[in-house]
Image (cartoon, rainbow, N blue to C red; front, side, top):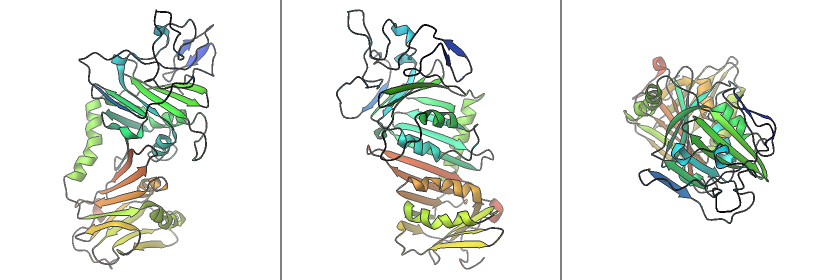
Length: 385
């Protein structure tokens, strides 16, 4: 466990995520952040900011604080009296990969919960930051599925990306634990303001939380990979493989209605495989699974209100791992629409569109490899078992 907290939590020691301890005996450290000096002209800087707001004592945005100076100005609210700028432990701008602020941490918390698989605590995600936003990608241990959650820059109140961003690997379960320090965030409750930045020198994701004037800071150590290029290529392989072949079958469905229909899948005991059929003929969209006590067929006619779009030029029936498919459907609880595509190789891509309060676009993409021996493409008799 690697958690160091400042602000309302003070004491002689702070435990970091890498297991080391920092001594703070005799110091009372208070959370806060400040605006760094302007970037050098040679440094690329991509900035996105929301509507301007007045400063307050509880404003924790790293892009609205000011440095203390030597001209007699009051110190920044992010620094305790007598605490120098070098003691603040905040990264210099030329050490920062990105910095951002969310008015509510509920949306990123909900997205990340859709990415994790089961209760394992060693689930590592590759985080990619660029001028357009931020994404988290995870693969299953068998490398047969990949899920990616993407938030564009408009989802954030403020977003800055430096030097075209970059990538790093992080334990996503640890990140979720830190986002939940103040408890699970539910709709209609007080929101936790979240600011994030990544220190390239320390290889740490710095997470600041503010809920009703209570502040907490968490430093999460990034995970070192022996071959970063190899890891990046492995994550890119899924999407590249899907795009290499055309997708003769695609449809956009309303997530809420599909979620209600798929609730029956949970009643199947010991189901291991699941088949998906898309066809220009009836049944146009069929999901079938078999358990130890019976089987289940869910059919959706083309004329159903479920569909926002239905395009299918040939019949395709493909089998997938049951548990993997159910994991890909977890995002139905937070999404508005879901986009199904099956390419000629049998790869299934499900893209869930999640609405955000700020008007930004958030997507959860799930790509799954088929059971090759059971993959059927081309003219298939829809009535065949």
